[in-house]
Amino acid sequence: MNQKTIKLLSLLLIISSFVLFEQCREDQQTYWVEDAPVIGVTYVHGTVVDANRMPLAGVQVKDLANKTAVTDQNGFFELENAAVIRGRLMLEAQQNGYFNKSYALATNQEHTTLQVMMSSKNTQMVSAASPALIEMEAASVSLPDNGFVDESGNAYTGMVEVAFTHYNPTDDYFELLMPGGDFEGVRENDEEVLLLSYGAMSVELQDEAGNELQLAEGETATLRFTVPSDMLADAPATIPLWYFDEAVGRWIEEGFATLTGNEYIGTVSHFSAWNIDVPLDDRTWLEGQIVDCNGAPVPNIGVTVGPLLVYTNENGNFGTNVALGYEFSVYIGSSYNFGLTSEVIEVEAFNENEALNLGQIAIPCPAYISGSITDCDGNTSAGTVVATWANNSKVQYSGDGNFTMVVAQDVEISLQASANIDGTVLLGESSITSTAAAEVSLTEPIALCNEFNIECPGVGFILDGTPIIFDEENLSYTIDDTLNIAPLTGLNDVMLEHLAIHITDNYHRLSIIVPDTVPNIYDIAVDGYTDGILALLLDIPSVGIIYENADGSVSAIGFAGIINLTVVGPDYISGTFNATGNNGGGSTTINMTEGTFCIPYNP
Image: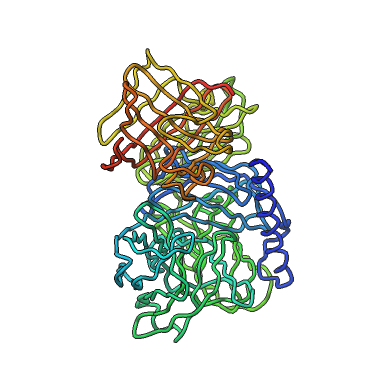
């Protein structure tokens, strides 16, 4: 069975399993999106940001069916026909230095606009032979001594790198930072519930080479969560523990924690993200519309609904699942909306299993920018507009080529429009300055006249702080589909399906090893283990990027990084890469970062 067949069967299995997971809960009537089919699609327009709302470039975002996009320099991505299961869209974002972020939300829209926020990893090195305490701002984890195993189940005795972060329910961006997004949980009896969180943490364990570690069988770690002072009065004596299952995008109940003083304390036998939550059993649908001071609908506004954050669509409408029998607040918070706020609506507990419509919720008149999109011949074109300014970005899709966006007041804004026209992605740019609580219009449409590509040839990177720029006049390349390149040996047959791209001039040689399938981000192998796709397929150590001197001696072998392919054929291969590596002798760790490449290619 070849690799493509295996991938296809795996994809079908994933979708089938997820659909069965959903269908077996239909009789519970706990998850409700009106008129949502079992399997649907939506066109996703989104941005990915860090905890400071700064855009993250080069992030891989994929849906349930492994359809993949990569964010640009503004953190923007698009996914056409992203899979939606019973009205629930689930995405996963991956980027080096950050915890994988699964994000789910309810949608039954043809186009869905959203923002994904990723948490950076804090790290600490500890010895596997000694007990260790990892302290966070309002949480901690106690690790056992001699209690770790590698991926093969073998005891591990070296140094352990612990990556960790804490999610505080009182933080401004808690709703965006939490894994899962929609606070969906599954109880030990398979009942599906909404969750009210008292705090969460993500913890990952790796050996010195970056390979995953876990707790050994029979070993446990102790988690401690400090309960926020304004939640302590309602905190139950015991509370369920939940771990996040990335395969289904839900929190799974496993064990419990006990309230001692102002701390919840519990033990766990494995690591992922862990959450302490009160389960809210039944739910229904809540919706409303956000309007400005003149009664006009306001799109792309973040609405806080209890523990959830949802965004208004192009008509100012929002909707989400809410718990029955539970009091909660609905409001527009300034953190997500450039200082805009609304009155707080207190929703009393109700027990009728029917949709609740809050009607119109008014906010002060914001600043607006408006304009239109055309193709290069001046014809109106549907497309996506990304507005960026200091520490913020907005995304909006326009089906008729006209757009009006809510933005911050009195700021210089850069605009980029994009559209797929007859199979070619075209771009256009503009800029505008917003005013205070008024609409400002572009004097000219944003014309989509630039094809999305990178000029070829070209390659360069930074090696331990020193720029390495290839001489374009003498630049040449070869493509080796056997991968039998020095200094690598012992390659197996599956490697015949992959490429080794050798880029050379009179002074440098760079070999970049990539699959020749689809544009994607591929982790570089670490000691031949399955940390990433390359390691899984190649099964050899330290493969990914090889930098050689003019005399053929190896200066660096890259590992523990990413290769980001933005274009693969038919005319060229282009992308970026970064990696940590060893020098040719393997004794010194170096950095190979900020690399770009673009070379002609015709498979």
